[in-house]
Amino acid sequence: MKYNILILGASYGSLLGTKLMMAGHDVSLVCRGETAALINAEGTDVRIKLRDEDAHRSIRSAGLPGSVTAVTTEDVDPADYDMVCLAMQEPQYGSQNVWALMRMIAAAKVPCLSIMNMPPLPYLKRLPGLDYDALEEAFTAPRVWDGFEPGLVSLCSPDPQAFRPPEEGPNVLHVGLPTNFKAAAFADPKHTAMLRQIEADIAAVTLDAPAGFPSRVPGRLR
Image 1 (cartoon, rainbow, N blue to C red):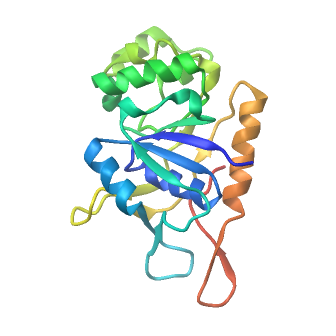
Image 2 (cartoon, rainbow, N blue to C red; image 1 turned 180 degrees about the vertical axis):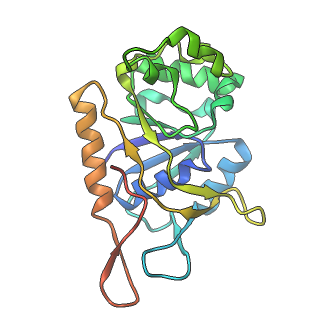
């Protein structure tokens, strides 16, 4: 089954987006207008090193089984998507336009997978024994999260290390350490089943290697 996935953040989010596209799923990246125009014109370019290879490979969105579309916060309806991935740094969610989109995501009750730099508040509310109210001080705009149901928010460890090369455009991402994304289950088994299907789809992707046998691409979803 092909899923339609919304990713907030076109920098770090383009790594997971590329993995999803390689597995045949469609991706929309939420970003600034200038970056959106560039991605829609030229696509994305994620550079990643395969095992036993010395040089990074350039994996461009053009020609992948899934598609990518870049949108701004004003031009997206979260209800059109099967899942939302939160890939921005935590302070960015407090900006006016992103906050408005977050309210729409919460109202649409779409399952959200976070690969943020810190766990979002609704996910922390799922963990027993935590003083949820006291943790709000660690967040730039804690009220952003008020409308989210904890069971609809899961956490994915952002272990892969990647950066935008300063000499390149914002549609290029260089992956320095392609370790796996490790995700927690959702409260609803149906949403967890979607994660497991995506996990299997990503794991099945291979690229031709110089030695003549297919090589799996690192940075899978677990």
